[in-house]
Length: 231
Image 1 (cartoon, rainbow, N blue to C red):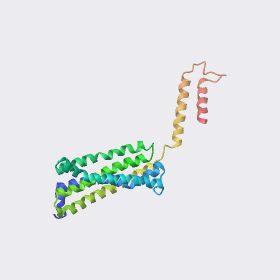
Image 2: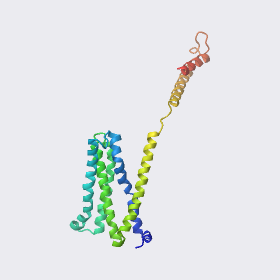
Image 3: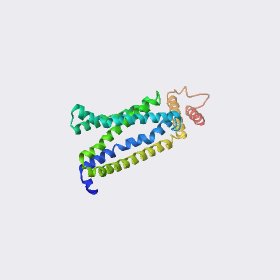
Image 4: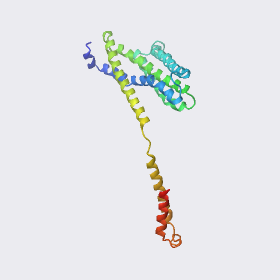
C-alpha cells in the first residue's frame, strides 16, 4: 500500500487516534515521575530512595504490561473467545488501570511508596493497552503495510507526547511564577472593614453618647476615623 494511500483508510485513522490520545500519558509519567518524587517528597533521583522509588514504579510497569500482552491469548485459548473480542476485552480491562493515578496524591500523605505503586499500576495499564493496540494493526492490514501504519501511529503518539509534556511544563512554570495578592491591597481591605465597623457602631450612638466635653458628635466621629487611618 503506498504511503499516502494509507491515510485514506479509516483503520489508519483509528490507530492514529489511539496513539495520539494515549501515548502522551505514558511519556508524562516517564518524564515527570522523578520531579514529582523530588518536589513532593524530597527524594532526588540521584538518592538511594529516589532510585528505588523509580525502579519500583517501572518494575510494576514492566511485569504487568508483559502479562497484558499475554491476556488476549489466555482469553482465546482457555476461554474459547474470538481473537478480536479477546483482544478488545483485554484492552477494556487495562483501559481502567490509569484511574488508579487518582489515588496517588491522597495516598502520598502516608508514604512516597504508595504513589510509586499506584502510578506504576496506571503506567502498566497504559503499556498493556498500548501493546494490544499495536497488535490490531496486523489484524487490519496486510504484512507489507504493518510497519508503515505502525510508524504513522508512532508519529501521532510522539506529537501528542510533545504537546502534553510541553503544556505541562508551561503550566508548572506559570503556577510557580503566579504572584499572590499584593500586601497593600490586603491592608487596604482590612482598613476598609475596620472603618466600616466603626461607622456602623457610631451610627448606633445616641446624641447624648456622642457629646463629650463640648465636642460635637460629628467631630468625634471624624476623630475616630482619623485615629483608625493613622493606625
